[in-house]
Each structure stands twice: as C-alpha cells, then as structure tokens.
Image 1 (cartoon, helix red, strand yellow):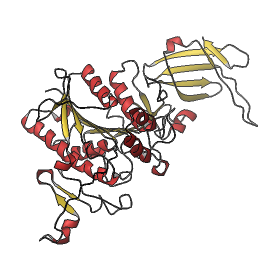
Image 2 (image 1 turned 30 degrees about the vertical axis):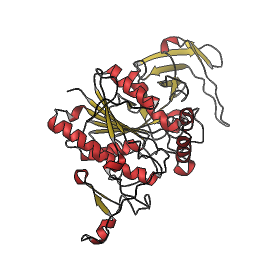
Image 3 (image 1 turned 120 degrees about the vertical axis):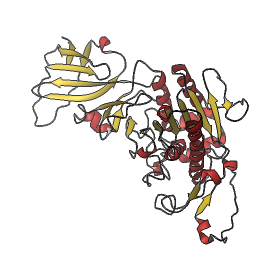
Image 4 (image 1 turned 60 degrees about the horizontal axis):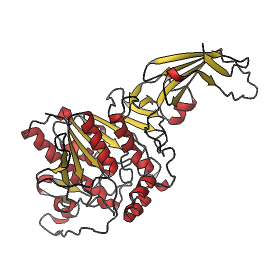
Length: 419
C-alpha cells in the first residue's frame, strides 16, 4: 500500500462562536464531572493537571464534541487531483496556497495518499478552546489511522503525520493513540503558548512516533509575540537562522496579530505578519522538491556558536525537511535565504583559515564551489595581539563533500585565489 501522509496544518482563526455544553455536575459521579468528560469512542478528557491547573496552563477547557469540532478528512492521490472527502462524495476544499503547494509537491515527488485534516471551524479564538480542541482532532485522526491499519492494510512504517502550529500537537495526540506507532511525525513551528514546558502528555514529544522531527522558526518569547517555541522536544530539532525570527520577516509577528489578521481575512497580510511562523511550512515544502540543495544542518547549541566560533564545525550533520534522518539526534542549526527569496536553501560550508594555527568558521552561500575564484578576508585586529598572516584558505562544501584551496595573492594575505 502507498504511503499515507496526514497534514494537520493549523492556524488560529478569529470567530465569535463558543460552544456551551451543559452537564449535570451533581450526577452520581459527583464533582468528578467538573474535571472529566467522555465522548464515546473518542475517549475521556480532563482539565486536571497536567492539562490544566498548572503554571503553564492556569485555565483549561474540555475539547468540544466531534459534532462541534467538525473535523473533515480530504484525500488526494495522483489519480484524483481534486479533494475527496473521506466518507462523502467529492467536495471542493479551499486550501490556503501554502497547504496546496505542499500537497502538490508530495504528489509530484512520490505516489502517495495525501490526507488533509480540516478543523478550521473550531481552531479559532479563544485560543484556550483551540488548544483543547487539538485533543479531539488527535483522537479523530487516531481512529482513522487505526482503522486503516487494522482493516485496510495500511503499514505504520509508511505513515507520516505533518502538523503546523496547533496541528503539530494534534499530530502528537494522534500518534500517542496509534498502535503500533507510526513511522514519523513532523512538527512545523509547533504552537508555543499553553504548550511550552508542559508535561510530555500535553504536547508533541518523542514518544508519539518512531521518529519525531521539529522545525522551529518563530520561537520568540510569548510576551514578544512569538507563536512557536524554542524548547527542543523531538528526536531531532532544527533551528533555521536560530529559530527566533526569520530574516526579512517583519518584527511584529505573533499570536495577537494572528487573530487580528484573520479577522481582516487578507491573505497577503497574513503572509506578511505570520512570516516567521509560516517559514517552517515553506522550507519543508521546498525540501520536498529541491534536489539541488538539501538544507544541511550542523549540531550545535546556538546559532552564534555555529557562525562565530569554531566549536561546532566538526559536529554531526543532518538534513532539515522531508529528508531528515532519525540519526544523529539533537539540535541542529543552519542558515537560509531571506524569507522573501525563493528557493530558501543555502549551502553550508566550512572555511578553514591556516596560519600558525587553524581556525574554522561555518558559513553559507549560494551557488557551487566550481564558481569560487577568489576570496577577500577582512581582519579585525585585537589590541596587544600580533596578527598572524593567513597562509591558506580551504572551503569545504558539507553537502557535496568537495573542497577548494586558495592561496594569498597580496603581501598582506587578505585576498586569496585558487592555488
């Protein structure tokens, strides 16, 4: 059976509809009903710790009922380019451009069943309710996948869940209910507020799939209006450009603007203000199609250490995006193009500067080493330290495992050409 890709790509949509469900808190189960609610085959949910009543989640709500959440599943295949709603007749689905681009990239690259999970009716304001609804969406997804595995020959080794923002945590809830575990879950800038530093039961974590990888692109603190989170929680976590804000994205991005912009329903404005948060989606989609550059990333503890010291230049590498590997594990950093310049991938190179000692720096650039003819280096002198002339420069392309050597052409050893 072909692989199954379920994409739970969620943002917060401003609406004013809030469900009000009555329950008899004085039933034979007493006050326990205040903190637990069950929905038939979807299971039971609680507002007790760790889902509520904690420092990270002072207020918690129950997920709304399946009939209110209105989760819908749309199947795409190479044979059926239009959306087929599972269990219903063919239906038109208005996907945002970035979702549609990802779906098309998968189908262009491999023969897969791509299932989009639409819960846009209830992933809206208030945010607390939207976070609770991720649990119901996860339960619904798990029921579908368990059915496909048990009765329709689906292989868990070929199932990959992909979720953006709140959808990443919904994918985690789904993965925790699927037996045996699916092959992979990818979290694209997982939602931070109400999830960061919570118990693993509350958020996407490495136990939810055989391999969990996460791309962080908008990890500013929530008080600074960041939508994502920096906390490393996958087997492999990627931090393009440090994972805080992306180059050439507006500074004012975050959860408050998210609600305002969706209320205005201006797609171009959404793209602008949610630039960093959506960059994870764009780079992942690019990694599906781009055969010339594979988002090589280097294990390190910060972007500053990667680019300004030689601490990480000899560390392990991985590839961000579709072709990420479950080993080596840890936190990986890389530089990309500006968020407004496609394609986004840049080649990661190691530059070795040989004098009396050897200094290394990790840099990035566009193009190929075959086009490198010369290099100019600016030297910043440090008081009371003698400058040691650079005798040789070696540039090593990490992805292609090729290098070029350059020698000085001036007496000051600041310009170098191919030897």
